[in-house]
Amino acid sequence: MSGQVPDTTDKSVRELIAAMPETFWHFHRQYDRAYYEYSRIHLGNDEAARHLVNMTFVHLAAVWPRVARNPGRYAWALLKQRVAAELSLRGRTPTATETLAFTRAIRAATVPLLDSFRSSFRAAYGQQVAELEEGLGLYWHMARLSERHFDVLVLRDALGFTTKDTALVMGVSTATVRSTRRTAKGRLAAAMNCRFENDPEE
Image (cartoon, rainbow, N blue to C red; front, side, top):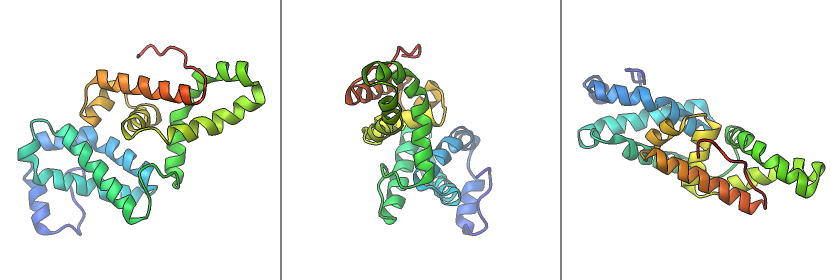
């Protein structure tokens, strides 16, 4: 949004945006990129993702007096509802893997995780099977994690946000992000019958 709204937006919305306090714009600057990247991954379209995020912030502006004290969790839930609604209109779900952006995001998230898997895969199955399992098995299992586990891995590992920023985006504590990520990795390891190396952040 960057303080501006599209020319197609009606006058009342432009007036609403123009009247917003600095706290709103600070929130916008802090979370716009995360919301856009998350939406783009699921929708697979830059323009659609930008429009969805802009309209999410317009809605947030309309209810800002009620949520200004702690907008993070509300805004994240609102964004996810809008992404899910848009995907539903397209006959998809938030865990569908049909977009190139979504595929790339999961692959990007698996890169750091694969480093921890390689040694145990090679020891157990040999090099050739390990390469197949690394490329397909982890990808398949990650897409089937719970919503919160998946979101943490996407934000933290695919999009590269820090634990602190991931917590802020999702409206949860850093401890929750760490434990959720640890549990997600544990479930992946169990599903794939191998283990992760220790992560200093956990």
